[in-house]
Each structure stands twice: as C-alpha cells, then as structure tokens.
Image (cartoon, rainbow, N blue to C red; front, side, top):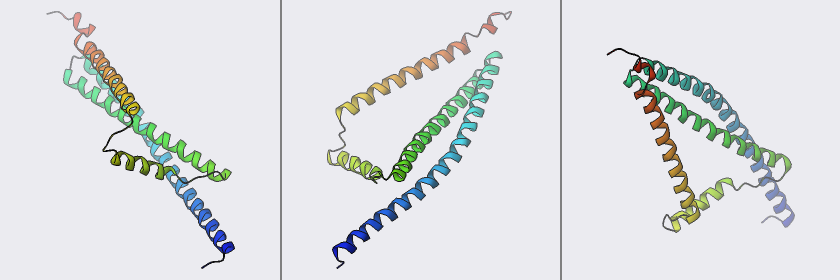
Length: 169
C-alpha cells in the first residue's frame, strides 16, 4: 500500500491527467463540430434557396409535382438547420466545459448525469416526470399546428395562384 501522502499525490495526478485528456478531447470535438457547422450553414442556405426557387418557378407555371419537390427541398433545408443548431448547442456546452477546466472548476459529470437519467427511466418502467410529459405534449401540439399552417399556406399558394386567373379558357 501507498503511504497516505503518496496516495493523495497519486489521486491528484489521476484527476489532473483526466482533465488534460478531457480538454484535448473537447478541443478535438469543437474543431470537428466547427467544420461540420460551416458546411451545414452553406448547405442550408443553398438548399433553402434552391427550394424557394423551384417552388416559385413551379407555382408560376402551375407544375404541382415540381412545387412539392421544392417543398421537399425546403424541408431538407430545415432538417439541415436543426442539425446545425444542435451542433451549436453542443459547441456552447463544450466551450463551457473548457472554461471550467481553465478556471479549475471542472467536474466530470456530464456523461454520468445522462447515464443516471437513463437508469432512472429504466427503473421506473419507462415513466418520466409528468411535467416533462406535459411540456412534450404541448410542444408536439404546437409543432403539429405549425406544420398544418405551413402546409395550408403552401397549398393556398399553389392552388390559388393569381397567375392562373388571367388565363383565357
């Protein structure tokens, strides 16, 4: 066995090595996420612009199938934007962890907290907190309402196109 003083030195060294390894890992993740986000940002704008252009041209020429292709492109752009925002949130969390390491207030509990949450869900038979379920249901209703409103607006634009009113029968 180690004497008490050697044990505390060894424990301190282990924690310091852990912080250094975490710092290196966080820096690599941030670099990767930054590169990915740059690609997502440009890809989002390109796909969204293409979707708007296709939808606009198709609506002008009353090409309903092409309108839906434009809508699909806009949906893809929205999905890309969601991934970009998710990466952005992860980048902010990693930056906070890096700041905590720099300030000496770093506590390596992020993954542990997530594992504990999952274990509690399994132990409770998949039951979550009622407040979480209620807010999730409310968010789901809002998202469904927004999707319905968007679909209705697009349908109105396509099927009640003012360009069609000026055509002679």
